[in-house]
Length: 60
Image 1 (cartoon, rainbow, N blue to C red):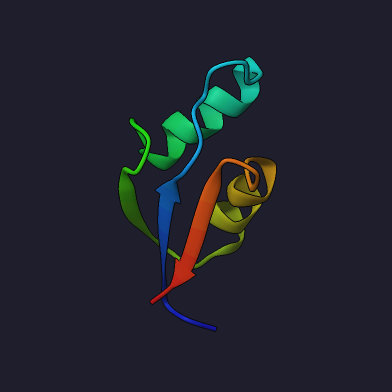
Image 2: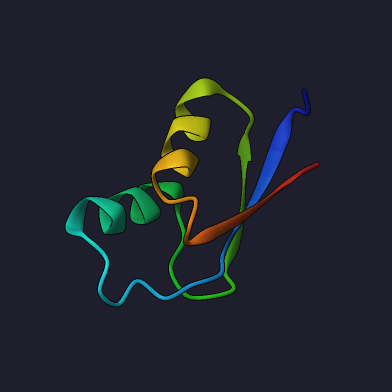
């Protein structure tokens, strides 16, 4: 298992549910193609699972 995850918002938030928007905001993503790095842990993996159709994840 890697120590960090690189998360990129690849799809727009238009038409998404409010809970999904809050999850994206909590991950620190703002605009399409914005990329952030987070530690690889259970909480972050759970958040990614909820919005997997909107983001791309790369292990670094």
